[in-house]
Image (cartoon, rainbow, N blue to C red; front, side, top):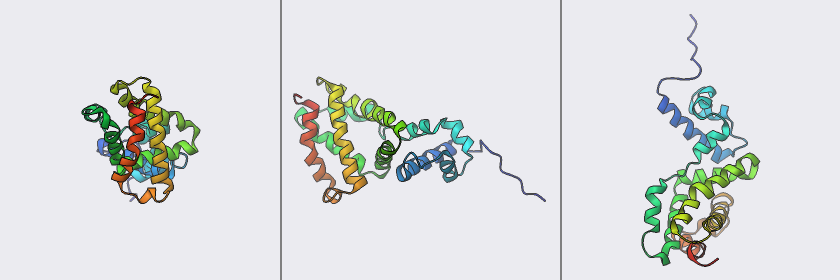
Length: 198
């Protein structure tokens, strides 16, 4: 008697399948980079047919964009960062960024995104969009300083450099320094980018 073949495509528990695909995509984009992670390998890790990945997310690029959603709700976080003494906004933002990067899930998103941008030209505009429009742009705009786009891109340069040096390349002693000390070290730079005359 022949064993029944598993049906391709949808399976019971679509919400579970969708979350499994996202988890597998985060893992593979972070560890392998955009170019080496494939829809098929992501589907295999998630335990689904590759057509289900396409059904939920469309192309590999669209799946990548779904994975690199900001790991926080901007409308909840930004008011807290912007509240309080403006002379300490740089420290608050630095501590927030470092806290994100010290959290494994958020760090995976950031490192995966930057690894992808260094190997796959198609991903560069996606990463740029993520950093400037969805992550840092809204923060700079809500602060009310002049030239918010320039300020956001300057902060982005600091964050990208930090992620590359501390979390991807592992430059010492930066890589093993305490998170709080790193936050305090970059705070004056962020303070300048956020509110000082450029």
